[in-house]
Image (cartoon, rainbow, N blue to C red; front, side, top):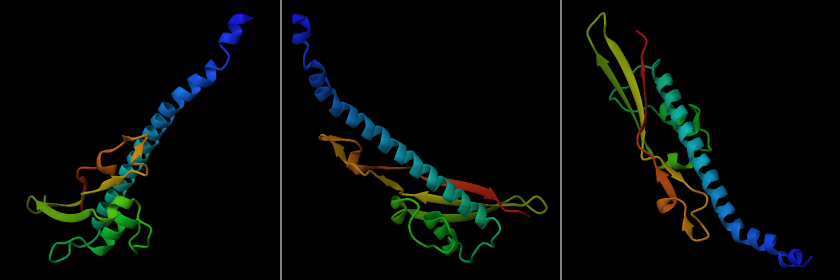
Length: 150
C-alpha cells in the first residue's frame, strides 16, 4: 500500500514532460506533409500546362502564354483565384519550345518550368525551435517536358 502512494501523480508528471515533445513532433510531421502536398500540386499543374501547350502553336516571340501561366498558378486557363499553392505568386514560370531532328523525323517538345517556388510554413517555430529555416522551404526547379504531336 505504501508503494502505491509513492507512485501517486508520477503519470501526470511524465505526461507534462512528454507532451511538448509530442506536440513538436506532430507539428513537424504535419508541416512536412503539407510541403509534400503543395510540391505535388505544383508538379501536377506544371504537367497540365505542358500537356495544354503541346496542342497549341508556339507564340512569337517565344514566351509563356497567359493560359499556361494560369494553369500552373490557378489550375484553370481562366485564372480564377485562389492560387493552387501560396508560393506560386512569386514563382517564375517559363515555357520553351525546342525542335530537334529534320523532316520527317523532326520532333518538337515543350518544357514548362517553375523556379523560385517557396513553401511557406504555417508555424514558424514550436516552443522556440524553428521548424524550417526562414519560415519555409525553397524548392529547386520543377519542370515537365512533353512532345508535341506531329
